Length: 165
Image 1 (cartoon, rainbow, N blue to C red):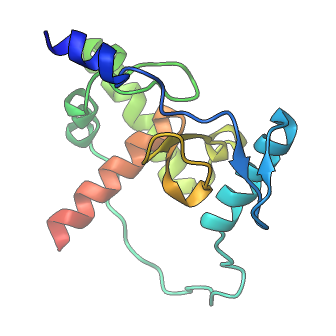
Image 2: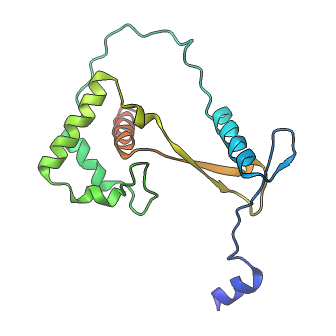
């Protein structure tokens, strides 16, 4: 009965709109214009000019990422969108002890050298409307899909920060 009510009230229809408004309020319908508008909006939304930040010269002792912390990847939320490397979190549940060790070596290498491969800086943004049929960028949620390795490092660091706080 619930599905019939939804069919009648059209609740199952997509809330995604095929158009979006430009900065000046004009409705864009061309796919290239829409993609460019989203790129501009997301760039403005996440713009961060850190070039003017002072360089920290004090040496901070950091503890290495432990295998026990890497085991945390098994506890990450399941059923979520795959990252850019198309690996679902569920894949990491099957890691054995030797695999956890290799993953911890990789994460520590990135963490200690402070150098990440260029592919780790790439994210894919997905937009989800907050209201059905909206054409304003501001009325959308943006979700960033990133490579899982970066997500693991960020989760481990976030967990460490939470413990400190």
